[in-house]
Image (cartoon, rainbow, N blue to C red):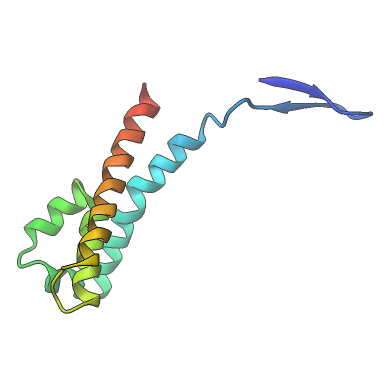
Length: 109
């Protein structure tokens, strides 16, 4: 911690870097898409239209939630298949999944 003395005031403590923010960001990245998937599964039939069985969305919920959510949404908003620019969005979601796992690992080390 760095202590800075302001003019005619008490000491002000400033952290050199936000120590808890990476953990909070990783938590939101890991929990956020799962909550969205639960909401989509409960209140719509997007997952059942995008996937043939319940097994692939379940695995996606556990391992790659951003990718599963992006694929289901891209399937639903287009021509009921994923092609062209929609694959770019799915790849970005896959990279977000990988980044959330890498960020969690880096925060633990």
